[in-house]
Structure formats: C-alpha cells, structure tokens
Length: 433
Image 1 (cartoon, rainbow, N blue to C red):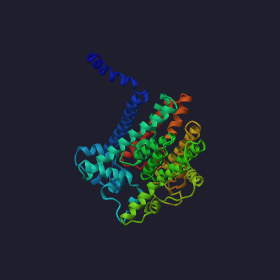
Image 2: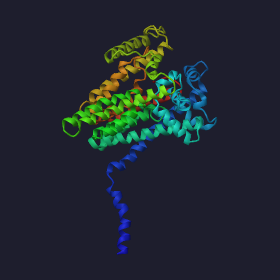
Image 3: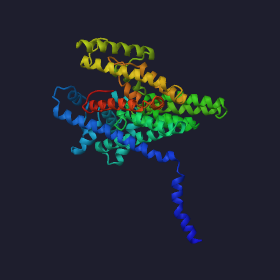
Image 4: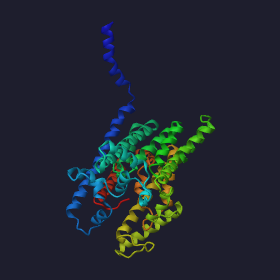
C-alpha cells in the first residue's frame, strides 16, 4: 500500500500538468512575445539615441527638444551606464509622470494636472520599495509599465482564444505588439496600465461580473480620462443581461464605480489645495478645442490636404490657422501621417464590426470619437497613434479579417516597419504623439 501511495504521489504532478488547460500553457508564448517586442522597441530607440548624441548639432530639432523638455535629474539619475539603458524610452510625457511621482500635484499643479494619478502613484509606491529617489522611481516606472503590458496581453489573448481560435488569438497579440501606437507600452507612460485596466474591465463584463468590471473601469478612469467611456460598453452588457433575466436592476449601480476614478482625482487635487477640475482647464495648454467628431474629421482632412500641398511646394509659410508651432514642413508631414492613421483606424473599425463582441466595438468607437472631438491646433489629430494603441478590439478585428484574406504577414510587417520608425524618432527626441 505504501508503495502504491508513493507511486500515485509521483504520478500526480505529471497528471496535473496534463490536466492544465492548453490556453494556460499558451500564455508563456504571449509573455515571450510581449517582452520581446518591448526589447526590440527599446533597442531601436537606444540605437537612435546614441546616434543622435554623437551626430546632432546643438541647433538640431532633437537637441532643442531635449534641452527644452528633458529633466536629467529624473531621466538620468544614476550618472553611469545604467542611464544609457533606462533613458532612451524616458521621453516627453514620461518626464511629467516621473515628476508627479516625485513631487505630487501640489496647490498649483499647472500642466501636471493633465496627467491622471494612478500610474504615478504606483510608481511612487514601488519606487519607495526600490530605495526611493529618482533612480528607484525610474526603475519602478518601467517595471509597472512592463508588468501591466504583459498582464494586458494575457487577458486579450484569453478573450480572443475563448471566442475564436489559437491562430487568431496569436495574430491579435502580434498586431497589438506591432501596431505603431504600441511604442508607449513598456515606456514610462500610463498606456500599459490603462490597457490592462480596460482589458480586465471588458473581460469581466463579458463574463457577467459587472461589479469587478466596473471597479476595473474606475481604475482605468483614474489612469486616463477616456477610461470613463468604459461605462458605455458596461451599460450595454448590463442591459443585455437584464433583458435576458440574468442581471438585477440594482446591478446597474455598479456603473457608478467607473466615473468614481475621475472623481477620486478631483478629490486628490482639491485635497492638495488645487482646483478640483484643474485637469479640465489645463487641456487648453495643448490648444485643444471641443468640436465634435465630424468637425474633427473635417479639420483633420483640411490639415492633411494643406500638408500635402505644402510638402509638394516646399514652402515654409505657416498655412494652418496662421499658428506657428515649429517647422511648417514638419507639421505638414505630421498632419499627413496622422490622417493616414485616421483612415487606418476607420478601416479597422469597419472590419471589426461583427468580428468582435459589440460591447468591445462600442468602446473602441467611443474612444475614437472622443479623440476626434477634441482636435488640437495646428495638428488636429495630435497623439492619435497613442490613443489608438490600447484599442485592442481593433487588433482583434483586424486579426480576424487578415486571416480570412491570408494577409497576416503583410499587415504585421507593415505595422512593424512603422513602429520601428516611430521608435527611432522617439529615441532621438522627435515628437510622435
């Protein structure tokens, strides 16, 4: 009997391994792809940063941007070779997040009020564990972003795998990692955390776990203002389940947890002596105007058309709304490129219809409509690739469409090439979004 018990004990681990659902074993592949893609982006950005440091003249655009927007105390805190590894992705808004993590918002937050608090608060907390100071916070900013991105990729994979097949799920993850807007996943930005919270919220919603979904939606709203738009798909899921008799009327109260994320930020600002709605007023610093999505599309088309004409003529005359904001030719090129992203986004929305759950499609539509409703001057679609990055339902829909037409390789290669160009520009302090 004892021998039989020992034999059974030896067999049990192997049986347990065989009993693991295949989808759990596949998550190792997801983690590897997510981390490998971030390593590739970092390598391109780091190489571009080294080239720029050795070849740029003091008057170059990249050098001017670095001198104007960088804070070496936050992005180069070690004074050693470690900075060469950590600094290349700490650009632009990353400096603001690191500053908030170290200083908080205070009674006069200024531009800091534009950056929502959950990510910098987590960076601050983990930074303390890692020894405190700018160095600890810089390491923490990368660690949280990478962990959140890997977690988000796993959630997205499970969502697609459970409703489609393994090949489609794998392609969706590759597209999520290769899309040019994924540049900011794994960088000291809030994008990875927002993606993770939004993906968890929508996954729980589809499972009928509305309270957990709304709580995750609240975290998303405390990370990025567009997180509050998760209330729309969650409301749709509740209504569908209520009509089917599987949700109670009072379960709709869970939806209040989503805007609670923004309310918490307002309370945080007020507690520090700042205006509670400072995050609303500060948007004017980026010359953003609320005009509605249709007017935003028209402005984007107008800017792109003027950009094509200006690039064709080579003129450096300021032609868009008479506003000078840098080299007119660079602005023209950006407007053309951003309009191409808008066309790609609209195409992805079209092919995703009926290929992804309607609640997820509705969320992607709401975020895109919001981005189009607040155009900036002189770049109406400023930061559009970054706004599109977390919209994983579009990666899902395009993956289904690409497999139907055997266009997997063409779509992935096209996206990856643009991502590489984005990483090179970003690493050399050129504005992308």
